[in-house]
Length: 189
Image (tube, rainbow, N blue to C red; front, top):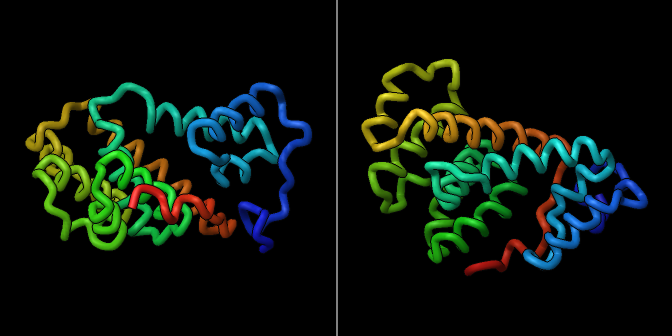
């Protein structure tokens, strides 16, 4: 893989990018100082890129009973279990930014159980972990544990969907040797 390719696959970005895609990439550059490699990776097929970004934006940025930090915490814990280099790097940086705590980001990457977390977060991350490792074993008592921790029905839906999304993206990133942007490594430390 060459350094300038976002994955081990040689799938060039659409050229030229449609105006709305180029505008989205320009917004990323303005807000993040880069276009995340995951977006570049999907840009060989604008329809797939649009589907990916629509799902990501809905799960991670839209209104939810889960905070953005909670959703990023789920992303990191799922990615830790799956050993997804791309997502651990990118979403670990997001946890560091949103929490203002570089140690929390590292703890979630390595072993979320060592973090001093409230019961709510422990229940949420335990559910995400079980869903990642043994989803067929999820039972009503697992959902009840989330309710007992203060999560509503919609929140449980959102936890399951965020965990499910990152289980999918982790596998795609690993299978294609997707590489995080270098900038993520030093952010918010």
